Length: 105
Length: 147
Image 1: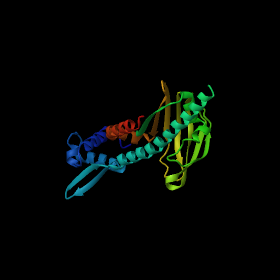
Image 2: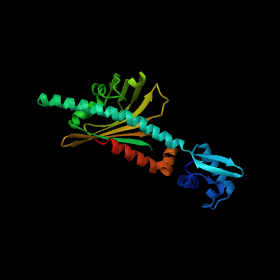
Image 3: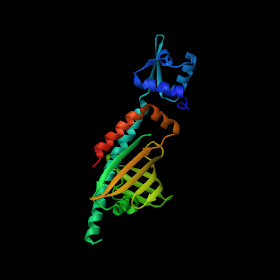
Image 4: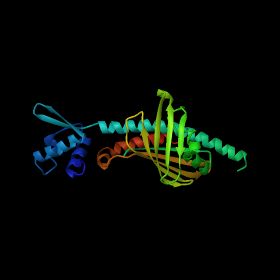
């Protein structure tokens, strides 16, 4: 249920606009406290939508590129498959049309 | 939700295109990613009927199978079917194929849409986060492949 909560959706929207943000930057627009933000981040990390990396005392949160990459791979794979299929479908249908015309239908 | 849209203009009347799309005889002539042959084509083109296509992909000399159910059939304008891979690949889950035919002066304009079905949560994620980028991609594919 990672995306049901409006705060979590707002966090994702913020992350989409910049490359990485600290937890306090993320918490700023909300009226809730830091521990509550941390809980939301736990849910998002568990859903594999974000990553957290620690450098010294700062935790940087980033959107995971993976789901986007998967969507692109899906599109590219099927684009090749169907493009090639539809080209053959077109020439087959056109030959059937020519056949029907020859038979005077 | 990720989806792919392709448009083709075909110099044949919609009835002929529709039968080429839905009958086993037709499917044998065009289904597959490359020039590899269709090995088995079965099709029962009515609502609730199923189809199954087994084909050889030349690229890796491997047999693949796709199958599904006809969800909507309106001859000669529209067919909607579920679509699933079997064997040869990790199963990416069920997806949906919609083909719409429109009579145009030179024959038929075919609009093809393949949509990935995901659980509701992932779909909402796309709506919130990646919808913009995906729309752009989709437009790119649609523009590039429109005949």
